[in-house]
Length: 181
Image (cartoon, rainbow, N blue to C red; front, side):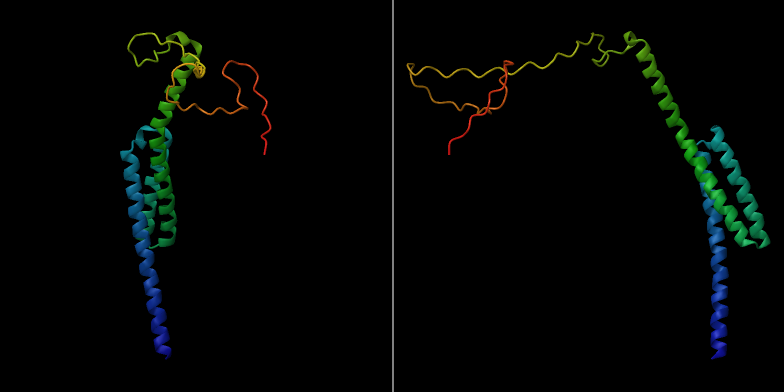
């Protein structure tokens, strides 16, 4: 029985060591992939991103040395930092063009605020000047019903108006009348 327990413990210990090596190798590959993605995104041209990219490369190189020396725990820490720096370099590289575009847009807004005469036409560039927006016109009142002396016409449905609504003429609203029960 003692041999079985000792053998199971030894087997579990070996499995744990093999798992550590796989994690370190996987982390090494992950950091290298992240470094490559950051380079492809143009991190070298963005100063902040380039600094983090360089840190990621240095930490990956140090992790390789530690892996070769057998210090897998310390190598795993270096690889985590390398992965984080590479991801940050990638994010900074992607952010730079968006920031530049936002700054250009802000400059255009400021220029238009300072000189509204240079505003492009609102008609889509046809060259015609845009008319100022006209306020909406009030709706026309419905025609009064025809007198009863004329020939009978089919009754057309009249819209029901809310007695509390203000007339379109601008006069004060009618007071509601009590409804008999």
